Image 1 (cartoon, one colour):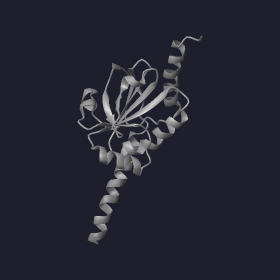
Image 2 (cartoon, rainbow, N blue to C red):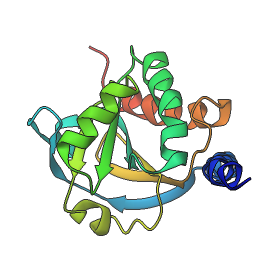
Image 3 (cartoon, rainbow, N blue to C red):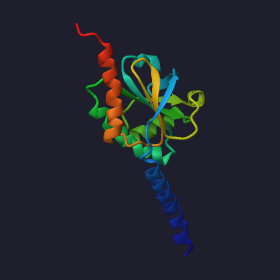
Image 4 (cartoon, rainbow, N blue to C red):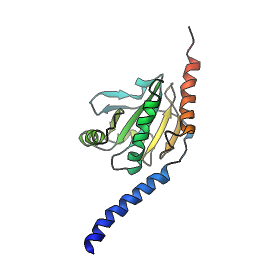
Length: 178
């Protein structure tokens, strides 16, 4: 009987985490106005700055490997990037507070192949005034934050993709046709 209870406790905890991740799903992108910048090292020791992606719409996703809702949305983010691969769109996954070795191992384990940047000191997390994970921001082609979402808005939902496509189309309106 005792062994059964010991076995059930982790299962109940995992079920609670999955239910909480589903309840986070469905939150909406909310308009948000701010300017932002960061310079971080990726898992391959390359320095990347948000300004490197000027001219593209960028989804900046703050996550951690211990966060069930973060893990839950990773396959959606991968499929979203694939769906918009022919557009000026990038996803940057900013890991918060974990060591490079752990993050690399985790990304390889789940076959997560989006650019992963390391905010090991949590300075970017704090500077962007984030309180919960996952939190994501949509950045327009000029580098301005336009939307924020705490949780998973459903990255493959029509409403979410429409917002991203609107931001992408704003760039095409700015670019003069020769």
